Amino acid sequence: MSAFLDALRARLGEPGLLVGGDLSAFETDWRKRYPGRALAVARPATTEEVAAVLQLCQAHRVAVVPQGGNTGLVGGSTPDDSGQQLVLSLSRMKRLREIDVANASLTAEAGCVLADVQAAAAGAGMLFPLSLAAEGSCTLGGNLATNAGGTQVLRYGNARELCLGLEVVTAAGDVWQGLSGLRKDNTGYDLRDLFIGSEGTLGIITAATMKLYPVPKERLTALAACNSPDDAVNLLRLARDRAGDALTGFEVMNRASLALVARELPQLAQPLDAAAWTVLLELSDAESAEHARQVFEGLLEAAFEAGIVQDAAMAQSLQQARDFWHLRESIPLAQAQAGLNIKHDIALPVSAIPGFVAEMDAALARYLPGIEVIDFGHLGDGNLHYNVQAPAGVAPAAFLAAHEAPINAMVYDAVQRRGGSISAEHGIGRLKREELAQRKDPTALALMQSIKRALDPLGLLNPGRLV
Image 1: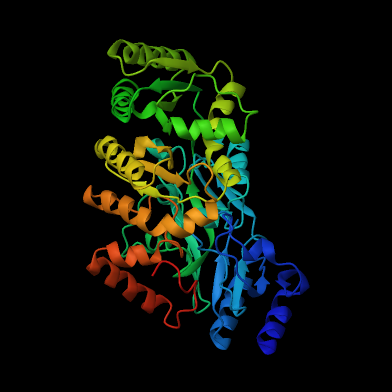
Image 2: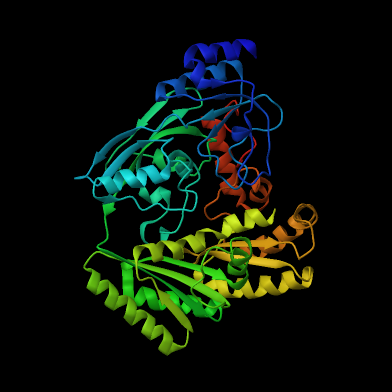
């Protein structure tokens, strides 16, 4: 491999290639479930350098693992333990290329941190609505490669819906210049959608043109206590009827998830007494602050009268609203502090969620008494993070080793019976690759494999992930 590394060094320069030393930041995933060993870490600074790296990988038959912020949860962006895979980090490609306010679009490189993209849009008096807990470290390229969702999908959609165009480097090192601010372009196959969500297995996203939106005149946030998932679904229906498109966020948290936050992060205030289910609602109104408040207060009043909400707290300041969201977004951190757990990122028709929760909660309690279900997520778009932790006194690692496979089977069988998906927004990576092979429609899987062979005939792009 010395000739390959010498060629890389000559093309990228010393800052662009890391060989030896401590590469653990690039070799270990966020959950620390898939530690690996990289041949080296390439850090190109331009699209042309990315293309040169992939051309060299083709010539020397070296597998490449693309990596953004390395915040993924399914083991999709770290190398295996062979020491033969090149990590391709996009972290140096963080240039904001253009903001076109008149077109309501922004073009940025793949290594831009999501929070920086949000800030750039805000600086231009616009809103970039993609928002998730890892936004301070995840990158735009990674968001697109996994079709990230987050907390505002209900109104604005996933990363796919926010993307207008892409710049992509193919496995052969060719550059597809598909950046565009067009809302309409009916000129053949939609290559953009092919690369979004492909987890780096078909090409390397190097830049993207994304939609921007007007900044809402008012945002109102509240926490509401419900007795059951059925009440939460009824509250969602009421909120849609009353607020329409102004309903931006609708998150749910079961009692165990907020109890875990209280245990692991006691410094975080919890405004409501413990409830079976707590809903976090947000309205973003484009008309006026007064109109937004009238709608929100009317919504909560109707929910109390219908008996589907028992308690509520409306944020009285921007900081309090941020605190409410921080409480919700701290659940994954609390889980990480508590130790390894069995994560599920599932999607279901909203109407099927109460039945799924009742069935699975009861089944898991029978399967292993004392088991803890940390259930939270984006009820508004049918996405639950239905996570399972060990009973008190059971070592998390031992619990994971003994029970992950049977619990996954129980959960995924129940999801599949209801027409759901085993991955809503986290992707497949290594964690769910075998599950996908077993559960995906055979025709769809065959088509995916055909596309992979056509675009990456040597199988060098992120091998062992997704397909």
